[in-house]
Length: 119
Image (cartoon, rainbow, N blue to C red; front, side):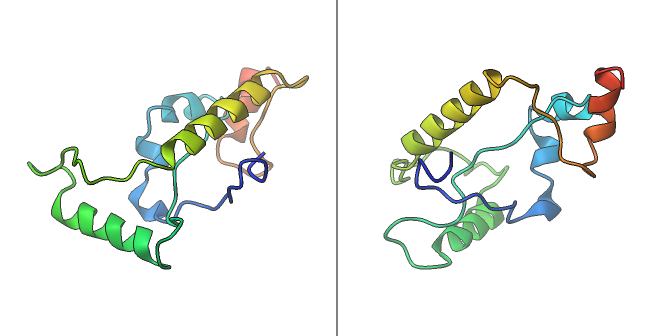
């Protein structure tokens, strides 16, 4: 599906920050419900390599959870529609599968999934 939307799936660029474990859907994952995060990532069309990481680091260091952590009119949200459509379509497709989605073998949440299904 990512290819249909001209997107690339990558791992979390900053797993040490625990974004997934601080997400709203983490409570679902803990009891075995498959959950994932959809985000824009670090590669921006028309911007040089490293641009996304630079912007992330700069904002995180200077503004995150500070009085200056607020909306700015200069922010570029042009990719958000594509990401929203991708997330919606992915969720719709998952909801219409013939079998329930599950975690990959070896995933830390698989045991909770198996328990919830009585296995």
